[in-house]
Length: 206
Image 1: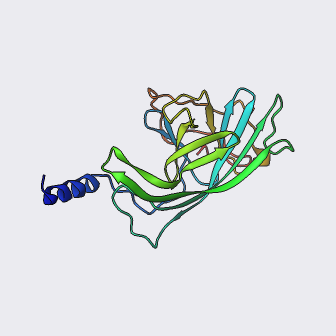
Image 2 (image 1 turned 60 degrees about the horizontal axis):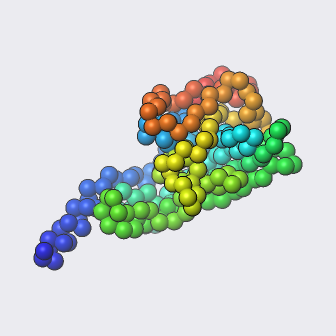
Image 3 (image 1 turned 30 degrees about the vertical axis):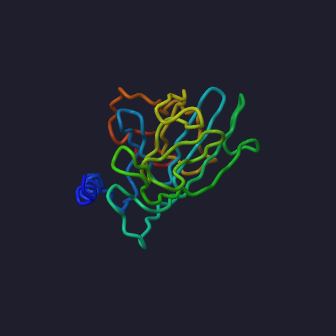
């Protein structure tokens, strides 16, 4: 195969990837995509996560596109700041003295590798919630499975997720019977956005 043919294949592999816009419009509600295996998070609102007597909460604080670097096909470049809480026990309180708080930033860097199936995005794309780590596939899109050395995004971690409209950790109540709990389900087909209980003093359900 000539060098010209190789260069043409490289160009075709990257140009055939879907474009990912650097722009991001905050707002809207929670959406479960990818046949129930991924969830899109709106800014500021907490997502509850539980397994047995373990309880966590995660929210996105700010999404900052990289405006100094021109993205290539399939890339979104920038940073995503987030906040998480975690507690375990028979009477968990996410704003209590036994809970741990974590604030960090995800970084979406340049694509590495070759072609669609052998490429990956560099940076730090995993958010920590206590002992759990969740991989992000877009600035506000997260897989609904915890990843570790032994298990990847396709492994069912036995976790449940409940979208909320709450932005104040002190008012977040995981025992609210109105909450809807979901788990990673490749056969699920969820309406978007997911209806959530309104914040105290508000009537909206988004």
